[in-house]
Image (cartoon, rainbow, N blue to C red):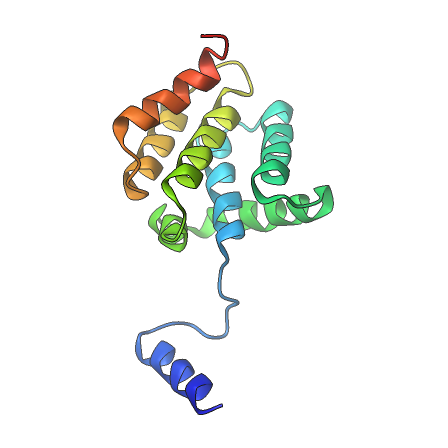
Length: 149
């Protein structure tokens, strides 16, 4: 009990807003997928479907839970100032999981058959913030754009 109270005071002293629910890695992933989908200011039905399917695959969640995450994420990204608030929640991901996330972002961006330069920029910045090597960033892109090679 004492440790819990101490932790709460530490969060308050560090400037955390305890009135807001603490974000989760799953929510951060949903936000990043939503950010890349909306970065070109047009979200196509195929991008929406890709986000839903990828969240289900990456997070092993049911469709209704994935849809709820997407709904919350789309609201959150309208208020967000940077990608850091999402990537900072993913520090504990392994390099393999980080690669899978970057690949999933490429899949969302390419779902409509083209990758907009703004989508590319969001994925590139996310990869940098997650310390994904440039070679892995390119490998993920090529796996999505040229799946047969």
